[in-house]
Length: 320
Image 1 (cartoon, rainbow, N blue to C red):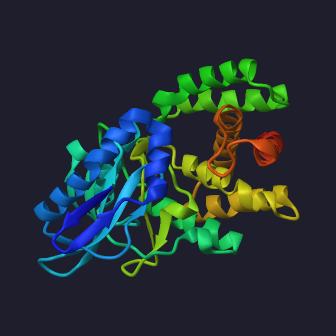
Image 2 (cartoon, rainbow, N blue to C red):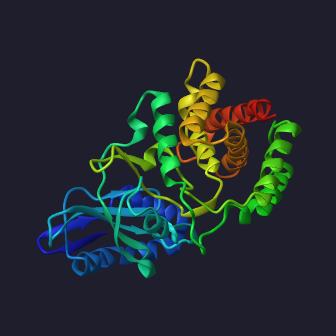
């Protein structure tokens, strides 16, 4: 699948095509068929020239460009139409470049944006776990600004999270002790009662933090949520589980990640830990039902789910 713009040919990455069709079936195939035309139209409308290799994330195509008017580098991102992708441009608008890439143009009907271009390397390439947690915590602090009305609120999901946990615990074979499941349910209930109107990235993991020139690091791919910023610390730990799995002392390193993040973000360590434990329990059941991106089945999936289960249980003592 290609888009032709002048003398340049833009090819959709085969891996992105395969993953989209596998996830979205016929709907995804139909969207992909129209995507080259959407890209060509946006290039024309926003006065951009494609430059370099076409990239992609889990649900979005990213085309590096130069703006013809001033030669400034940018990217055109077009995401698969899904409710989870609606509020990304709203988050960028609120932040205005503070800790995140700048939004230059948006086309909400096409789930498309023209964004500032950050660097090609991400925080995931940093080996020092303390530095990863420190950078994520500092960005979380900068992104934690008052949220406008109209954004999804974390607490709106709390009741469905608790119901989902009970359903999964009854239907999915697992060895998670009852007290660990109860701790996750308690956190969900507390989230329903706590209603801070603060911006939350919603997916603040190392691959979504890129090196940049305007600032050392900039966040990308936000969900655009309002709620407790400690949620992002839980997301960070959840996405660090493959790294922790190879650690000589994974529990110590998990605690260290939470400590450094909480300190640099200016957040209560107990709240960050509670969110981490809830998100690990939810990830455990998701993995049993659907697999993970890095392991859809077999011994590797068993290894990952077993570790997530082990860590979710041991974080309960830290939250008590």
